[in-house]
Length: 218
Ligand code: PRT
Ligand code: MG
Image 1 (cartoon, rainbow, N blue to C red):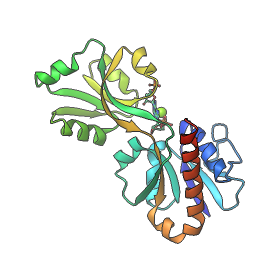
Image 2 (cartoon, rainbow, N blue to C red):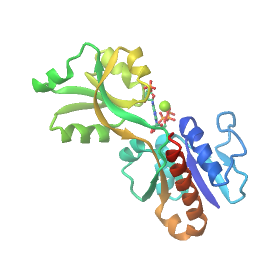
Image 3 (cartoon, rainbow, N blue to C red):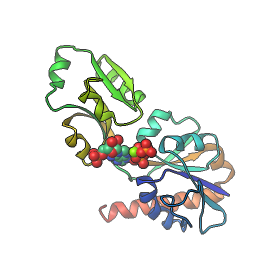
């Protein structure tokens, strides 16, 4: 049996064509089903539906053999016990620093001000500002980071941006790029040794599907 850990929403949607390329179809839709274990058309493959941030944990401990997780999530997790063979080039976005429209970010940096930053991505943010030699106070939030600068909790946020619509709707502007984000295939290291005959064909099919999609220009 192969267990694949996925989160619902954008990752499930963008993974569906990749699964199809490997001959795998979920028999139920996770958006409408309350089941956490979804059977597939293949008797030897099942999907488990977990929070995006929990995907690496299930794979790390071998409760899932494969998983799909954003680079944002993987960087925070640290990647212990995980093999990351393939960038699936899905769920793309950018990790950005953003501030209120009226806030002079670069001026504050020049003056050596110590900024307060809210983020769900504490490790990534710490690494980013340390690389820049900036001292910041990081405040961990679990969601709606965009609110922080609007109510005086922080000067800046570190969050994911795709269309930019959320920033605009809250009078925030992106001022600095932290990095490009996409989702990766992750594999439990022991599973790869013990179930290679089952896992390798799926990994190869995913890899071909990603290359094919890149070639066709989307
Ligand atoms: O939503 P939930 O709290 O359950 O979990 P999650 O947010 O971790 O999961 P989900 O499904 O929303 O995101 C899963 C993965 O998709 C993330 O780990 C990223 O790798 C990737 N991804 C790609 C994004 C975005 N684009 C994205 N835009 N994840 C979140 N966002 C959010 C962002 O945080 C911000 O609040 O969307 C908002 C900005 O979007 P725009 O389009 O307004 O710029
Ligand atoms: Mg979300």
